[in-house]
Amino acid sequence: MDEQTQSNPRGITRLLPIAVILVVAVIGFFTLRDYLGFEALRENRESLIAFRDMNYALTALVFIGLYTLIVAFSLPGATIATLTGGFLFATFPGALFNVISATLGATAIFLAARWGFGERLGAKLQQSQGAVKKIKKGIDENQWSMLFLIRLVPAVPFVVANLVPSFMQVPTHRFVISTFLGIIPGAVVYTSVGAGLGEIFARGETPNLGIIFEPGILLPILGLCALALLPILIKAVRGRKDI
Image (cartoon, rainbow, N blue to C red; front, side, top):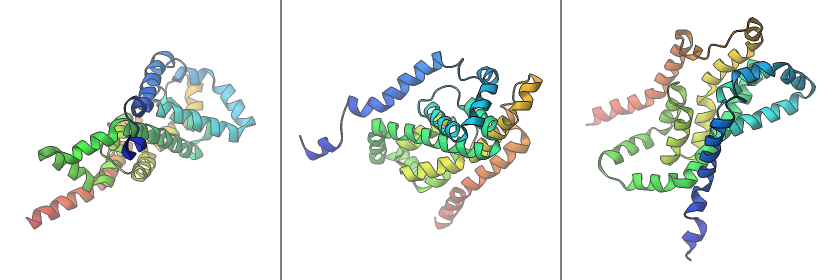
């Protein structure tokens, strides 16, 4: 057995982390939806608040741990978890707890996917020719902009934004930084909604989870998307001038 084989496990060992995530995600989808939904939060709100008041630090640590697991295993309830962060801890530090948790969970998926098949797929893309190679080169030359863009655009599924960078051989530190900063706008919006859940519960209503698509909130986020695209546009314009 050569040194490369010893340092790079093959086969099932390499696929094990992502396989575990997929299995847990499927099981969770069918078994946890009723426990990680809005009604469950409504029914348990008083006990959650009482536990938080008696054990604030412990509640924060448990919340971050559970939210991280929800994201890491793609379980249902990520949006409810974000609302819960606001409900229990207010917009701040609730938004901070939400961002930390989502970033940790996203990083777990990113590393699992890279370990499983991201490195090999990335190597194949690197060796490819024609249009595929040009696309990868374009992404590589604008990694920061592309990473922020897929985080800021509300229509991009969170799981997709975790997996694509692992296939494109994005450095881990870039993924972590862009994830942490890129999800802040959306996290603040939903955390602030969660912070007002007490009044919503009192009125017997359901929170407006489509609030992020309302003009007053969506337009500033689209403005941030435009800023993320700006370096790419500048490079494109300069490239045309050099032709």
